[in-house]
Length: 311
Ligand code: BDR
Ligand code: CA
Image (cartoon, rainbow, N blue to C red):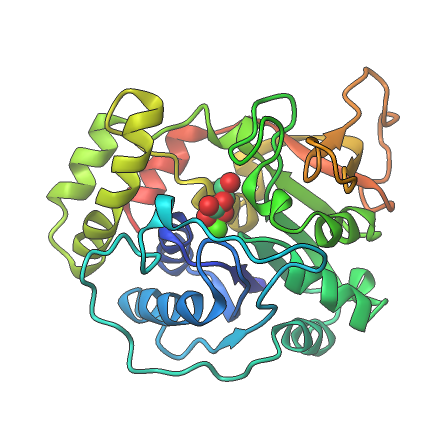
């Protein structure tokens, strides 16, 4: 079991991702909180609350960047509810954050476990970007990075091309793409084809333990949002797919591609652009090179659903 740190903007699908991590034996050393779905104080409260429900009430939570590097804060209450957990009336954790310097905590944990840490980012990439600026050796210090972000070759979910986590802080996302580390972007091209099936939803609804009751309660708001878009009562648990890939890389197959983030001020700002031409990254290309990322080619959705239901 490898040490893991999850940077999140909790959020309904972030909550499912944390429940998944807890149920599947993740050695979760800390959660760091970024702006994104909700402002950081709400994200921290939500993260602490979900960790408590998941039985991870000793995992420390550190708050971090309260806004993107080069654009104003923008949140997604229309997706995740006013409180970020679907306005389901959950009981908040009595805990408080352990610290307020998330990027420094990312660096500290990476230094404490050189070559071992898996970094998972399921919110905008501001904390990771700042951590890279604080410690230029961060790419050598962490083992690998898994990001939920991007929309390669498919429509965005904030703009025509932009996926939320990349769009919310393009400059930080570019720092993450440019770092010389093994980074997998699990994007909308991987998550959107896999809305939760009626059977999976029924089984969560039928669950009797507190985690299932919690998940079903917060999901209602998310289901409302997606029902309008998908035309059926379902939803896409984006962040849980990224955590699943982080815990078990074998759930997916990958393609190594050159990429960059559009940081211009035009309509394509916040797009993750990947070069998909055959041979764009030579066979065996070094996935850890700067400007080279991995994207997901195939994802084992059946195994994922089985495991999600055991969360
Ligand atoms: C991502 O954006 C957020 O709304 C979700 O929590 C997920 O991390 C999907 O684009
Ligand atoms: Ca998220």
